[in-house]
Length: 447
Image 1 (tube, helix red, strand yellow):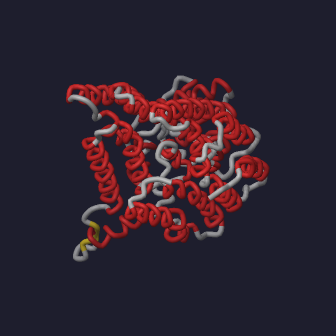
Image 2: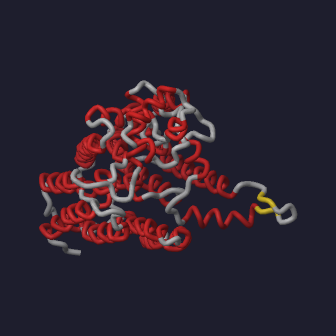
Image 3: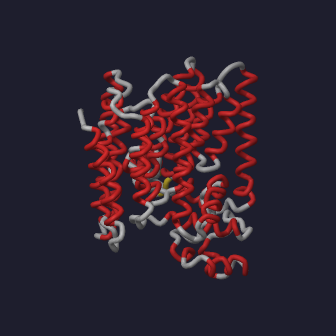
């Protein structure tokens, strides 16, 4: 599809400007937000054809993406409050407290001690606005360092977070440009990430911390392609210090060279991961741990996971006793984990061409996102950097359809969120799965 570059740039910048304007409305139009991002996403999806024609310069790519984000600095977050948890965690770190040990709800009740009670008083109402306040933080230590840096820039304010997350994105696209050059591709293909309207909104307007994954993942990919598996393992451990899931990519990124090399890389990855995770381990890992709660039962905006769980329910139900012999939710999570591990190991074991590493990593991260019990729109960061190298059109379509999630806010207000969770969610994932299956059958890899 031929979409003129000036018009494409106007649509992308216009989506940021329009959403920034409506963000100041009380209750901020969730459905309009989703529709705007979806329409802008359709324009963005024409990028591969334009990039193949060489019509976009790197300077234009960087400039337009930067403008899309800077516009959001003047906006209010639309329907998202996760950033309040980041601000709370940063305040705890600044006060010398361990955010993995105490949830804000416990601090508000006065049960956590005077230091935590004092922090509540300093938080300018942040503590009271946090969702799931009884849980200690889920965000690993590398993320905590980023939150703390943001706190130094703007204590208890969202601007510091936006600055830090934008800096992480800039570092990430710099590494992606190096990766593209390493693979002999035009660096302008970084526009696949940098011009995506959904991610510009989620990272800067909503201030989601998944931006911190971009430089770590891009760096791990670049090092793996350059046959530096030990350093790739270190970068992967840093990524796991932002969110735990990148560890599933380890077989793909470090399974290189002689067995001593990849064994050393594996040991280094484990040791650095454990070292980074030490504050979490010293906090709490009981039912009030955010990480434990998330891993054990968190669900939102999924299609395939729900279908898998419902398929397991009659198989695991004992009619005679009237109980489940095993928790279908837990069994489904184990099955997903096994599928991801097997795929990653097989792809890593069979890897003969390092240029194929990004495609293999994309396959695993995409399967994770599609099978995950939680697939929030900002989780699109999990696959988007890989799409700069391997622009699979089915996964690009996911970036267009994920904004349907915003309809759930309005449906929840109407008391119909359960209808979204059971049926409408397939509008996000059904066409993506169908297109991926079609292209797989036809032997088509990318747009």
